[in-house]
Amino acid sequence: MTNGIPFPGDNGIPMMGWGLVRGMLARDIKVTVVGLCNEDDKSCSQIFIQDLMALGVTVEVLQYRKPELKQKGFMSILDRLSFSQLYPASLLTTKVSSMLSEIQADAIIAVHTEPLSALLNCKNDIPVLGIMGDPTSQPAYFRWKYLDVQKISSLIFNRFWLAVLSYYYNKFDVEMLKACVGRGVVAAQYVKWFSNRGVEQCDYFPIPIHDDGLQITDRYKKGFGASKNKKIIMLGALHTTVTKVGLKYFSENLYSVIEKELKFDFKIHIIGSGQWPSDIAKPDTDKVVLRGYVDDLSKDWLDADILLVPTNIELGIRARILTALSKGMCVVAHLANVQGIPELVHGYNCILGATPDELVDGMNEIFSDSNYAENISRNARATYEKIFSEEVASSKIIDKVMSILK
Image 1 (cartoon, rainbow, N blue to C red):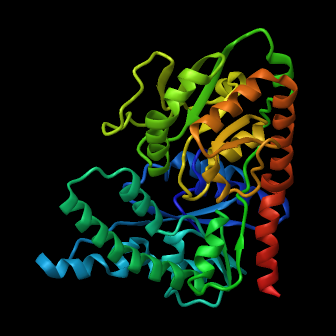
Image 2 (image 1 turned 90 degrees about the vertical axis):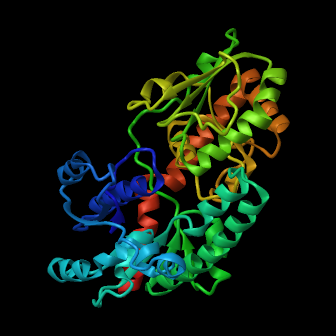
């Protein structure tokens, strides 16, 4: 059970669902995907459903909509904090119960809050492995801390309201995960987060990433040398919290150091849906190119020199980093990303830096030494094969399900 429909795109939860489905099918497990879809969610595409069915998967879709507030005025505050307002997919509980009775599954893998909320009060005896992405309160907290520009009075009020919301979100997130027989997270730092709140035996599950066969190992050794024109790519939908925070750090802290200290000519291609955020100053230079959404990134993976990930907050994981590892791309990322992906090792499978100077020094090292870059590329691919491939990462989840069935 997932929020939306699994597909091998650029978002962590759908990517995980796709890789997990393929991993289960490879082990001859009969799979039914139950997608819980907000009525306005464009990611619940018929194309994605058809792609899943082409794999031999049964697909069921249940739609939900956030209920209108029943109360007005001050009393609406309590209504906003109700379980059904915070987790509108919970309104599907009756339909989910009925569907599960028909499916007669041996086990359920529920990925993130939408299916977990729908299952919380569901009347069935099927064991559930619950897997969480970001705790619901975390993206809002980081938006408030890094992106909101407000008057002191509104900032204080919003912080108060965020604290109230976070209390309820944290309470319900913990309750939903505790209700599962098996529990896990996809970003390593949240094992401690949930453990500190009483969720026992919570595992870290690396996301299974689909391998489309496109690799650039060997490219660094062959492609580096005389040319000093380097292509740097940054990926991510420009409206999301992690990408916006990364753009803010890039614009206000990192770009001036790149311009001053990088020893090579360069172009930075920023690729992702949405417009440049109006509250973040874009570097005034033709060296930063806004590309918008690109449906097929094959050419960019093939001719880019590095993936730059300037996100400097410890929020979730970056699926773009994991995809880059699968390609053998050299990744230069802020050190904060290690919290979610502890498999990242500076100088082995990526370049990490805690400051703009460290990040630019890392880029200069890669661009100056083809052998060094090639080693990082090969180790990146090896890390993917050992930990994040569909076969390996999905097996860890499947083995957990098998253990709770014994």
